[in-house]
Structures are given as structure tokens and as C-alpha cells.
Image 1 (tube, helix red, strand yellow):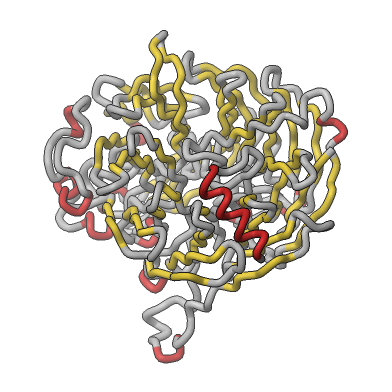
Image 2 (spheres, rainbow, N blue to C red):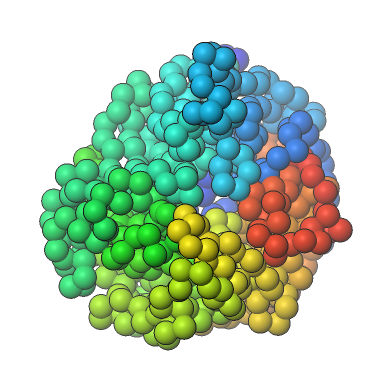
Length: 568
């Protein structure tokens, strides 16, 4: 362990090597780009498995491993575990293993009617990843709502704090973000009518530094001015309460289950918020701010610098928790500090990440819920047949489905092409509304063309698709771009593919043992070679059938939880 501790100390002093993968998105901007270039378009056909590791879990494996100082850190779904694998030895044996403490300790003393038997989310029991601090601390989100800090060298727990209460329907599935000496984390449970928030803790001690809510008074949201000076609908005070009926905001959803990004120069943390609650829109009037929104918060205080709501009064359960990728690119000929967001509602947004003004918003998939999106007001015009569902009615053929044109499978950006590589669903839905029901019944189905997945290369400057692959089933795994000119992505039926960034040509593919809902990474091994790693293990919303969208999933893939590493 002395060697690992020494390596951690060197990283703290010198910065991480370019061959490590130390945060869930590869960098704080969530570009999911690797500067490694030994695996190229010319030799990727020679890529082959070099070793594998079974996690022992058959639930959904989201997120991706981290790599630092010759060690790979692999997490599992609930019951949450972390494995540290020694990359310096053949076969990468386990260096240490962390078992999260059971959240049900003392459960016999509780009322079985009042509390669930175990923590669970709407869509399986997955975890989207880990985070690492330069001091050698590893942060582990536990589905029970706790955040644990481990010694990365030994696996010993340093501190553990309660971030959410699973007994009230709030869980912790999202990956934390390390920003300086803070560790920032969201929470889940909008579908259970909990109230969302984002929290920053002292990275060393676990002390709570700030917490900003998604709904409620400005003082709770940490908003001390207009939400966004560019839009009239965002400028009044106390919109987190006045755009709700009565006290509905207290159980209004807007949880923070997605990815977090950070701009150290602007000192802003960017996050999306989930859909409002309850799911039945007839039970909550108004825009329901700040659900289904993107917020930029000051990293030191948590105060909102700007906010923009993408789907006011979200009737379809889209939310806006998908990743916000930070890139400096020209927009309409002007150099721009941009934030690019592929929303579940079917629109791709390019936003000035300093001011919060939306510069571009165009459809990147079927989206018939709105006839147009006015950039001047950011108030979408809802199609009349979807505008006011009856108390007992069926609204048919809504596109996209509530799982979105893209769910939480993250996109990647390549500076080689200035293109974004985006894994997509192609699903629409019928919604069945019942009188006074808290949620409609959703029935998802294939979208136009009947294929249920897509993978596209998106030009954010022109808001156009450079090339596209149609997949028979959802591209449920994230994307990875590399300096070798390649993009890797995984499909729900278990294929890991490598394509040419420029042309989209498939150059290599490998069928893993289970459906992929996790994200590939690239790292440099102790031998200097470049490797690709992915965890396959079907689950999540997709693995549960996605409300009828994948009734044939068992014919495509099987359960599993296996880390696979590929090299030349």
C-alpha cells in the first residue's frame, strides 16, 4: 500500500497523468474524451479482450470505472460495493473491497407499513459512478442516500454522511463531482414526490457547506436575483413557489439524479433537474419552476448564477437531468464558452454558459409535443392535442417517450472533429390518464422507422447531424471519443462498437455477455499500452422493459455484471 499512497501524493503535487481516468466524464467538462492515441482507426480491428472481472451482481451496471495510480476502481449497484483492482499485476487482482453498511440495520424496530424493505429507485438500483479527490479520497454514492469517503489506497471508510432518506423515497444514484475542496452530489426520487436539491460537502471532513433546492422560496433555491435576465418568464422573484398551486412545491420533484460539470475559471457548477411531481399534470398548475431546468451555481456558495427551464409544466416526465458538456466552440461565427445539452424532450441546446442565454435549440430526434420553440422567450408552444389531457383519457403517439430522445447515457465530444457523439433512444409513447391518479400509465413503443435506437454525430455550430447509425435496440450505454480518431459506444443488446469519428464507419465490434448501460473509458496501463474498459450488465429503466418498449429484451441479452478490458 505504500506504493499506492506515494503515487497518490505525487498526483496531488503534479496533477493526474493523461492516461488516468479520474472522474466519471474523464474531465470536469464531461467531454468523455481521451487524449490517448495508440488505438487508431488503422489498428482498432486488432483490439481483443485481455482480462475480465465479475462484480457478482446481476442488477443494472451504470457509470464507469475510475483509473488512478495503477489501480482501477469498479462500483456495483445496490447492495453497493467498490473493488480496487491492481493493474500492475497480471489479471488485475483485487487489492481491496468495500461493502457498504446495510441501511436496514435496526429495521425490526421500524414500522413495516411506514418504510420500504430496502432502498430502491423508480428504475432499478443502479449507481452512476465514483469521484476522486487529489488527496487520495474516493467518494462512493450509496443508494440508501449516504455519501461515503474512502481511503483510495486501503478502502478504509474515512467518513459517511446522510444526504437523502431512502425511507422517504429519496435515494442517491448519481455520481459525485469533486470541485476543488468540495464534493458535490445530487439525489433521486422525483417519482416518489420528494423535493430535489444539490449539496456540497467539505471534501476532507464531510461537513455540509451548502444545499440548493430545486423548488421553493428563493432563499431555499439560493437565488438572490432573477433566474435569467434574458427571459421575461424567468425574471420574477419567488418563482419556485408562485408557479405551483399552494404548497405543491414541497413535494414537487426536480431531483438531481444526473451528471454534474464544472468550469473552474467561471467557478460555476452546472446541473439539471428532474421532472416535477406528481406525474399527473392536472394535479399541479403553473410552470413548476425550477423543475426540468438547467442551473448554474457558484461553487463556493451554491447561489444560482442563472437558470433556464427547458420544459415548463413538464407533462411528459422528461426532466432535464442529462449531462451538460462544456466546450469552447464557434457559434454563428463567434467564439463561445458553450454548454451543450441533449435534452430528453428531443431538443439539443447550445447555451452561453456565462450568461445562460440559449443560442441554439433544434430537434435532434422526433419531438411532436411542441410545434415550435421560441428562443426569445424560451416558452415552447405545446401542440393543442397534448395541451390539456382529460382526467380520464388516452393521449396517443407522443414523441419522444418519457425516457427521452436521450436518457442518462452520456454523449462525448472530440476536439479532432468538433462533433458530439450522442447515444439515443427512438421511442414514442401513449399516456393513459385515470381520474385523480398520481401518475398516468405510460406505454412506450418504437418511434418512426421502428428501430428503437440511434447513434449520431452532432454539429452544435450548425445544429445538424453529420452522420447517423440506426440501431435495432436502444443505444443505452455512453460514448467515448479518443485521440486515435475513434468513438466507442455500447448497445442494450450487449455490443461494444468502435466507429470512425469522421465517417461513422463501424471498424470493430464485440458482443459482451450482457446489455450495456454503462460507459466505456480509455486508460494507459503500467506497461504503457492503451486499453478500453466497459462494464456490461443490463438493468435500469431499459432492463425493466421501459414501460413496454423492450418486451423482447430476453431474446437479445441476459443479466450479468462483468468488467471487460480490451487492448491491442
